[in-house]
Image (cartoon, rainbow, N blue to C red; front, side):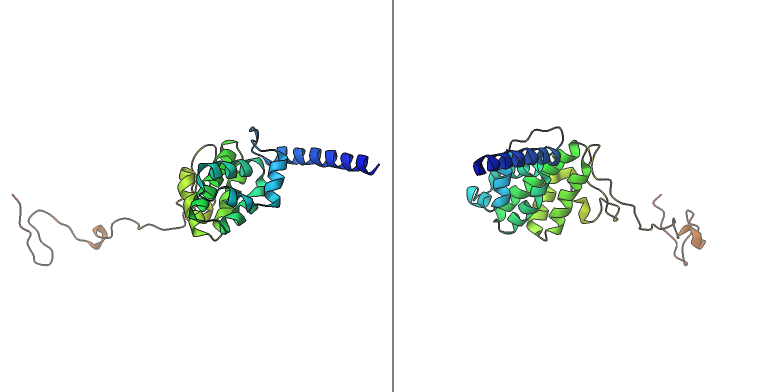
Length: 198
């Protein structure tokens, strides 16, 4: 009786988890990871650092798959980066950038921006720099605005970050012309006569 109840609970939990996973992943894409693999990562994120001590494309792929399969893994991935070496951090950043691009191309810019914001909030300059390099056009708009200075940019399916509004000011034209000076050929300023090249 207890075994039967435990089996029913296990099946129910697996079904619930699979529905949650379907809702949490990049829409339109099938995950390379099973719910059990994602749960195993969440239970012990540090095992990836031991599995991929030199970082590399395999770690990048694993991180991209995790972040694309379940948005809730991003916090664990960023925590993992705190204990990673430089090569592992680069691979982690590249994986996160790949996932952000996948969300952006799937018309989910909010999830892409959330990954960027989490990277910026990590306080890990090496991770932030590697992410910015890997993200390319998507950049890290959350870090200070895509050229406008007000923030709000980020990757979208339609192109690069939009940036924020520009709050700066520009001069209102030439002040030289409004000072009443007129330069004509042969005239001088302050008694100095220019030399004509002709």
